[in-house]
Length: 210
Length: 210
Image 1 (cartoon, rainbow over the protein chains, first blue to last red):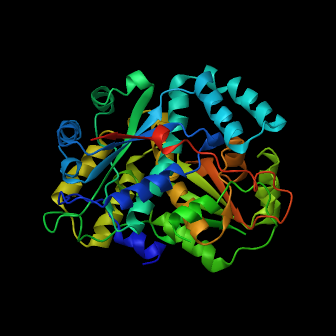
Image 2 (image 1 turned 90 degrees about the vertical axis):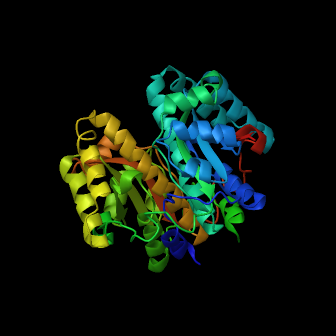
């Protein structure tokens, strides 16, 4: 399948079989997500990969009891920086210098520009900005999963505060933003699987300015 | 190249050659983005595809004079709903019924649930939620471009209000969120092309809960 056929094949799976997804497929999905671009290269989020059945069951309770939370093989939780701090910005700029093996004047001046603006911005504004970067990675994770033939379910429907508490995210300065169960669709019982995919027409989605 | 190699190949291109990208490649990138999932299937954004040189030049002025805005072949502007309104929600639910050919009680009850909550929420909260959906499509657009061998540059650095005015987005109830120039990297003069890609290690990015 090419990419378009793959994206037509995928759908928000509503019932998963509990079957495991091969570890190498999961690794490639995570690696694709790790490679996703983010604003200023800050990568302001992390991913928790939940396979523990008890933890999944606890999460299901705070996620409208959706079957895929326990029916999936691996549950990805995208956990976003609650704030852009001086330490976090410096850590990513230092990592850049370390990997590239040199300090660059332009880059150091860009570091100072971020240090003088981001940490003093409103925390919620910073979280929203960071969360958007996680959604870029989320889009790539969905695509990577589909290309591996792995089913997934984009999920915003859960009690984020309760999840933060359960996974002890607050202590780490993180907030859960979105989840992606990865698994194998159930052979029956999924109300969505046979319904047509609905998208706006190209005409309603695209405007050309020639 | 497989997906991982493709994502290693891509980078935020800083100088483009002005060469055109083939129309069929652009169409496949747009189609992949159209197929991106969104919360409740509302698809709360549109894409403007700018190829007009004068319009590109105007946009470059309000985008820190970044070369890729005029050096690219096609400039994608992701324009997001400024609010979830009753009309917009109904239009997407009606479209769903039309495409699937039937009305479903559960789906109609879900429509009522959104109608009774989204339109009365704060406009900025709604815009932020809608913008995140656009970022999922943005991640897929970047991936689709890379798989086509097309260079791209994720861009948040522009004056969004000025762009909204230039493209008359406000009248349409839209706000620009992010841009993606698509084009061909220049043969020389790009400071970033030969620098190593920097990402957090897997250890710092992934936490497993087994």
